[in-house]
Image (cartoon, rainbow, N blue to C red):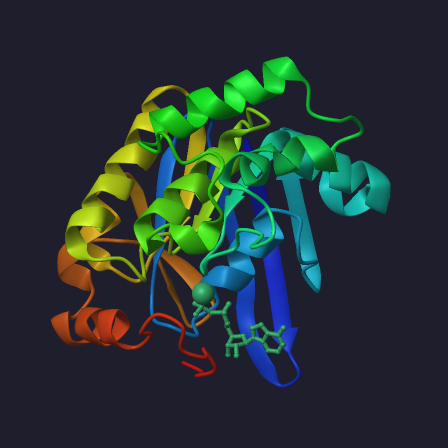
Length: 244
Ligand SMILES: Nc1ncnc2c1ncn2[C@@H]1O[C@H](COP(=O)(O)OP(=O)(O)O)[C@@H](O)[C@H]1O
Ligand SMILES: [Mg+2]
């Protein structure tokens, strides 16, 4: 489904990813954890064709995406990948329903009746009802995140990439959103989720991103102090700039 080969990425003198190789099979739920500033967002955005690595290869369903022209790459991203970003990313000027319909508007056609019905059913599935005509600012943080998840599902992607989708939410809402991702995965969508909350490493196949490399996550192998550091390091909305 996704194959990352010997990915390298550096920003100026900082080596963020050091020849990372990872295979994500269809239907898997992969969790990537690690300290703030460790390169998780960078890795996810390379896997989702939003950022180019300095070296290495990215295959999505067997397609060597770094060799695609930008227009084909954008189309592949739009069709196959749903993103749930780290920070609230709904468009303030659009209603809830139109936000969910955005991926259709970004493909080569206007939303039709069927799209609207599907968007409404997605909103129901994520627990948002009776709010389709409201604007994002009229929703709570958790509700906005649910709308973002519905939007990520709009083009029926085979892969959902989620970057700390619960970092800014309270514990109860966080658990509900995690259940939602599990449900999406059970229905057949491959999920790759980045989280700095190690509690969720139990959800699927888990890795730690450390010193630019991925290691299989084993609860006991990550010192409690590192886990605490990881959880405490990035309050919602903070600027992430630290280096390992
Ligand atoms: N666009 C960028 N320009 C320069 N440095 C960046 C950029 N994006 C990320 N970095 C740096 O790369 C490192 C990893 O960042 P990031 O991938 O956001 O880590 P994480 O998501 O694990 O917190 C950090 O040191 C960060 O400052
Ligand atoms: Mg990040």
